[in-house]
Length: 183
Length: 402
Image (cartoon, rainbow over the protein chains, first blue to last red):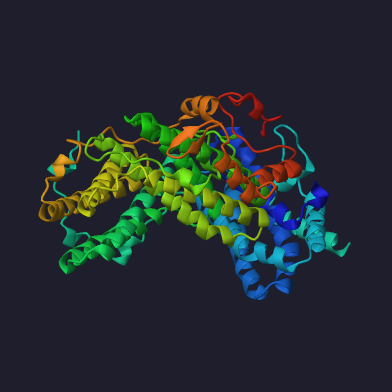
């Protein structure tokens, strides 16, 4: 099935998972909450990078008023990344975490909704199905280098990466995505 | 018990709201109580019916003074509808909202079926709810298929998602959708409120599907909305024919306003979200005054006392609550029913068969294909069976979607 999946399907599944993780973070406590938050940070990094490097360029070239649509989405992504970096820095145990993650959640949900209404249907309409499937493969290739979800007690390179500045995750993913698109 | 006739509401001239007051905060798109969303959708259906009823009344009304009075009340009702429906957030897609509409249909109709004192009317609700229950299952599969979301995010574990009476069997000959009406002179006043409520809810669902369906690009989504949208046409016919057509326009106006009081009062007593509850309370106080005006009109033009057609007090409040066992019993006993004339039968009679052949033309309708496509893509179908396996053995799935 994954080979048949196009990039819109893949991003929709990620949007669905992101929603679930926001709900899990907000409802969870202690270690469960920290784990959900780590998974959320990782997935958002993977997802936003894939969109910036692979999906938005495709949309810019292929859809009506693509530049305007994509610029609006990029501005939302920049704002969300700043919020995410702040949250990552203060951590899920900080007193202001709850109110701030709701702000991030609302920004991410609105961003995802705009994509699903104004960008994805146009992509499906204007871009060849093979190219959309190829873009899905590129996203998965980039995702493969992203740090995996850290398990408690297991110190790994990925856990270290997540422990560092969130920006490093984005940089590394961006390089991987560019790499995947060249192949 | 609360009797709206004994209370004083907000004077009509003070009911108009400005833009700031109309600009309400929507409920949380992810964390709201699913039944808060259901109450919003149900009351939206009630307000939409109030507006449409008033328009129809105005079109047949020859008295210009009454027309002006109707217009004045109707504008306030239009504002109430905008406030109620604008409590829904902008984030969910039309399909996600569709799942919530079906949850309303399932749990509201179940409540009404359980409380309905008249056996013939009760049968009408029991019959209809098994179809909405199946629509929920079909749309839930479409939701995961095209949006990758699971219906659990909408219905939580309050309402189960599994096959009901198969949607393809809902396409009956139109004449078999017309039921016999209750008798307005002998019926329990509660039955009149029930019929209005479910008619309004189904009418709103019909309007929604017939308009949002073509917004989808995916052929399976367009086709499923078309198919279920046509069943909503049948359901509106089914429920509206329960209402006694001999009620005068004035009597119907009073019944509408009384029913609005009943539902705002009901949901006010149950509402978990304080901001939403404040709106139900405000609207109740507006409706009490609108009811008073309707009662005056009835006295003046019908020469009758409204108290003679109304209950002495509001019935037990309508509640949104899980109806799993009730639905499972219906599934076990009524899944194979269809209608013949104004009654119900088990056999696929000739007129039913002819309609089925003409409509399906030997092909599987979208309601069947959406399940096939879901199975092809994910290896199974989407269900939420929290209270055990399906009560009908033949409808048990091969495996549960985690």
